[in-house]
Length: 336
Image (cartoon, rainbow, N blue to C red; front, side, top):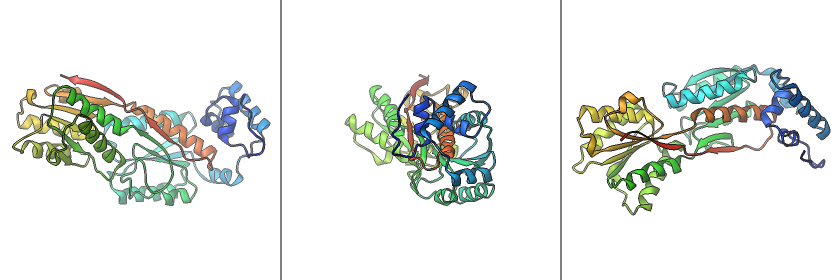
């Protein structure tokens, strides 16, 4: 067991290290969750006693006023990516006795703010949110009332929060490099909103890979879009209207990829002349005609990691914020 100096007040993370368990397990024991293995629970209680851990009385009071509901706000619940993330959150939090209240912000900061106020008024135990806008989404009003917050997928610039994100920059660079290695040179990018963490990071990765290959950036090959299927559809039609159309397109999310494939199909573009790359898979039936390379994330893991951070934050409100960066994912070819 790890010895913790007695000169500092022990925190949940100290107890976890001492007992050889996760911070989430310590929080479960503190909240008398019956699903913790009795032997593990006893070991945690022994560590709590040995270290002299005392739960913050204010935090305990706040938790008693809250209910067993956790709010989850995502920008597009119809997107399979967020569906899987929410599934991961729900499966993990169910073991701790929490239920989910799911909200769809539709990437609208005003609607998001309304949901944040609603969740605060409902005295939820915590909130997990994928911000609609990394710069404008204001989560500080929620945290100022003592509601624990965990940010997923997109970092928030309005404060320091526990966060779980993917390495988007590396992922976009990997997809772009795949086309470079295949001999493609007019590689376009349908970008997500630059106001979002994912949109800006994926754009940077695309540009980084082009620079590494000695390919000059052509602004006409970068189309800003909105992460929607219609946005991808319009972007492809714009790219193909050029006198020098692209021979490959890196698309910033799977919804826009669906729109891109629809546009290519309507225009009857020869599959030999263009290749596509997408963040996250799209339904197989929509992609059979065109070569499609995808970056497949451990999507449900984002949800389980977020749930673990929220449980740890509930157990130790004063702990330092933690950012967990998950790997970019694996590149897979769905058609070639």
